[in-house]
Structures are given as C-alpha cells and as structure tokens.
Image (cartoon, rainbow, N blue to C red; front, side, top):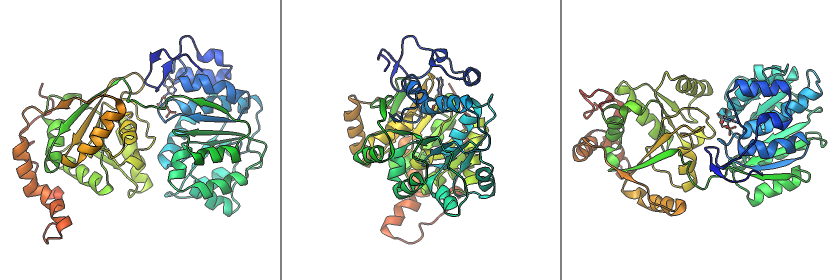
Amino acid sequence: MPDPTTPSPFGAAAPAAASFSALQLDARVLSAVAGAGYTDPTPIQLAAIPHVLAGHDLIGLAQTGTGKTAAFMLPILTRLAAAPQARRTRVLVLVPTRELATQIEENVNIYANGLSLRCATVFGGVGERSQINALRAGYEVIVACPGRLLDLMDRRIGDFRNLEHLVLDEADRMLDMGFLPSIRRIVRAMPTQRQTLMFSATLSKDIEALTRDFQRAPKKVEIGVRTNPAATVTQRIYEVPRTAKLSLLGYLLQQSSLAEDMESVLIFTRTKHGADRVARKLETMAIPTGVLHSNRSQPQRQKALANFKAGTVRVLVATDIAARGIDVDGISHVVNYDFPMHTEDYIHRIGRTGRANLSGDAISFVCEDDQGPLRQLERSIGHGLPRARAEGFDYAAAEAADVQNEGMAYRQRPTGRPGGGRNPSATDYRHSRGGGRGRR
Ligand code: AMP
C-alpha cells in the first residue's frame, strides 16, 4: 500500500513515485488512460490493480470519487484483451443506482476505446428492448442494477456461463437498498470459477458475510474512506431562519459577492418535494435548474444530469439517494439547502466538489433545528466550521416576506389549517428583483 504522505482529493495519500506505465496494463488501455488525462494512478488504483491483474478476489474499502472504477476496470480490460473471445458476456458489474451504472458505462467506453469490446447497462425505469438485445448479443461488459437484471434472467435472457469477472460496486449501498436477496440469486447463477471484486465504503457484518459467501481468499485494500472532508473544499455555515432559506439561496446565486463564482452548483434537499420546490423557485428567477430525484423518470434524470454536465443548466437540485455516485467534474459549489442529518452524508455531499485537485466551496444552511446535527458534525471532524453571513441580505425582511408567501404553504401543513396550498412557484421573488449576477 502506498506510503501516506501528501493529502489527495482521492481521499488518501498520494504515492511518491508511481505511474500507470509501471502497472503492467495493456498498451491500448494505457493510451486510453492517457487520453482521459489521468497522469498518475490514485491510491486505490495503485493498491488494487496488481491484485486484480494477478487474478485475486478483492475487497476494496473505498468510496465513489477515489478512482475505484478505473481500479477494477483497467485490470479487467487488460485481462479480457489478453484472451479475446467475441460475443460472450465476460464481466458483470452490479451497482445500486442507474446513475452509477451509466457513469461506469461511460468510463468503460473511455477505457476500452482501443479494444473491440461492447458495454451495456441494464436497469429499470427504461425500455428493456435494447437491454435484451445487448444481453442476447453477448456484450462483453454488463453493468446492471439487480432488480431489472434478475427480472430478465428469470425470463432466461442473458447467458452468463462464460462470466469471468463479477464486481459488486457500492455493496453497502446495495444492501441498504434491500438488494441482498436479488444479489444472492444473481451470484448463485454465475459460474463458480470467476474473479469476484467487491467495493464498499464501509465494512459491516453483512458485507463480511457476503465476502465469506462469494469470495475466495480475497485481498483487502482500504483506501479513500474519508473521515474528513477533502482539504480542497472550503466550508461555510449560514445560520438562517427556515422560512428565509429560499430567499437566501436566490440572493447567493444572483446578488451576493459569491454569485459570479457559483458557476456549477449542486444543491441538496432532504425530500423530493423540497427539491421540486427549490427548482421551481429558481426557475421563476430565470436560473436554469435541473432536478434529480427518484420520482423523475429515467429519461428526465438522464437529461438533467447531462445538461448539468454540459453546463447548460447552472444548478442541479438533488436528494441524497439520487445524487449517490454522481460524478461531475468541476462542480464549483455544493449547497446543503437542508442540512444533512448524518455526518457521513455531509462528507459525501461536499465530496462532489473539490475533486481532482480543483478547489470547491460547500455552503450549508443551518436552521434552528439543525443545531444538533451541526454540533455532531463538528465533533466528528474535530473542529468548528466557519460561520458566514450574506452581506447585504436582509434576513428579517426575507423571513417576514417568506412567511407571508412561501412559508405559509409548509407552515400550515402540519397544523392542518386550511388554505395553505398556494403554489409556491406563483409567488414573486422579492429580494432578487433588480439585482444582477456577480456584483463584486
Ligand atoms: P470514481 O471513484 O471511479 O467515481 O472516479 C472519480 C473521478 O476520478 C472520475 O471523474 C474519474 O474519471 C476520475 N479519475 C479516476 N482515476 C483518475 C486518475 N488516475 N487521475 C485523475 N482522475 C481520475
């Protein structure tokens, strides 16, 4: 394992002298990696690639964002290229979410650019025709969510008799989402002569049980499990009354001294309803905004993510589950519109910015009832977080106006008073009127 020396955005030490060319990867894979702009392997890549190349099973304790996709894919592709076999499914990657599946597919297409290999995704919420075709055609690499895959396997679609490599990615998340019975059934249907790689952010008793059941003498690499936010992320806390949050968000995005730098902003809300509400508000302010949550159809989610990646929408509003694993480079700001209940969610959220050595900013709104989770977070990371105030923002006026407009809708709901259902998107944004972006 690499010697911990320099802090790295990939969550652990940057090794002293290590290069991709020393890793015995296929020459075409190496040139694809160079084409992707990777200069040095990340710690998990350095630690995992030799084991995978040697054919060992592996348990990798690492989060998304550490470079783990390449850590398993580059050596797997190297092994496939060494013994070409056309039209056989040879690799199955099981993942918890459609977004992660799509991202892994994108990465495989980059890494396998020089090889004649095909990769397809299999997940629910979209038409199954192309997935069935890919399975029947024996695409070499299949990246799948367990539910849809099992559904197709039950209909005898797909032939996994030639499977050589099985990867369980974000295994802990798959268990959290209740996929264990499906995973067990899928794995039982795979050849026993195979390499099994498992990645998880945490090592629980359940994960250990999976390891025992599915793996043979696995090697273990433990890297990039972040106990602290990346050093490249600047964090700020805004204490704000709940009813003034929408106004403050609008102010920060349009009028504050930060506005100009807020080029690509990922906003987290606790609920789907909250995400829609924030997005509607920003749209009324002419801020192009996308929404990512599980009530959206798969095409809507893909479009929202693609537009955000391409920079055609400046803001993406997401819930934690939907944002799991999303991998967008160059996010300038993460905004915790709703403060997360758990420290690990905070760290995961703000890890979406400040990636690959770029700096990033994390802004967190903290209301009266978020003080407990905030104190818990500060204890976990071992220091207090700086408080900020939006200069020029009239907190009292915003609160009063929002109570009158937006606030009514959700203030009234719990008490059950009638007449609280006013459409928030129909209200004006009072505090941003006349303000331009980027005053400095
Ligand atoms: P992952 O943990 O697989 O989601 O990867 C996180 C991000 O790091 C992705 O955007 C990758 O394209 C990128 N990445 C992976 N390996 C490297 C590397 N060696 N150098 C630079 N970026 C990398």
